[in-house]
Amino acid sequence: MKKIFLTIITILIAFFTCACDKEKSVILFNKYRFTPETINSPSNTNIFKPNERIYYLVTLPQQVESKLLLIQVFKLGGESDERLGYDLVWGKRVKLRDEQKHYFTDYIVMHGTGNYVMKVYSRDNPTKILTSGHFYVKN
Image (cartoon, rainbow, N blue to C red; front, side, top):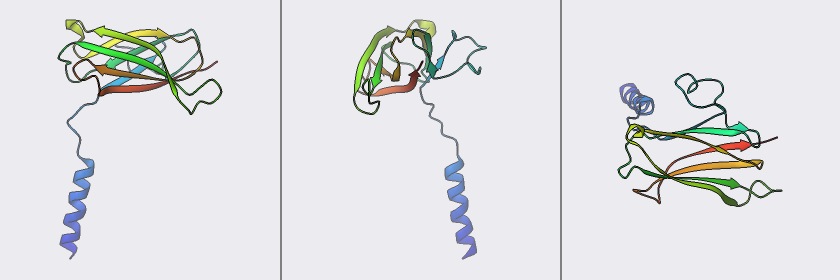
């Protein structure tokens, strides 16, 4: 009985502690332009002030076939209630250059305060979200 119990526990521990091979796409936000020094710096944040540049870095572990991305920013909630609804406030179609096979970086400026979400789609499969990230603009 002990051997069966130990075998089951060992299999469960091995199953839950194994590393996954599939990398996920990620969006990083920063107050400063992305360089090798700022990628892992404490300046990475998702809280910004109005009219401040919001630098973002989209990582793409797998190459996008068409080299075309659609980036959209939605404002979540209304002016008085931040829980209901969303509005599309910004969008951009991006053609990746040859040196940008696995990343894209740029910046945006938001003038209004609120809770925002950035979503990235590939033109290969425009119904599937590659990645998304939340950021906040506060006074």
